[in-house]
Amino acid sequence: MTQTYIQKQAGYCLHFGSVLMQLLYELIMYYVVELTPTDLTEDDRLKAVLVYIHKQYQPKISLREVAERFHYNPDYLSRIFKR
Image (tube, rainbow, N blue to C red; front, side, top):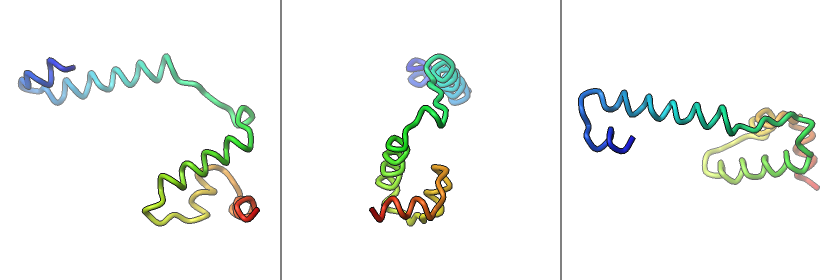
């Protein structure tokens, strides 16, 4: 990939992109870990919610948006954060 980028021959962007996509494909195929909802504890799911909120603090986000993203009922999620 480095050589392709440095040499910048005709069509290098296309070649570079294809090599990058192949790398991503390989990573996904060999290193992906699939979790089912039963593998996640409630605590893990709430940590994921908090991380998401922390990362999204600049743009406005709604309770409904967060609840939908993490498959919670908005009322339930609100009650959890009030505790």
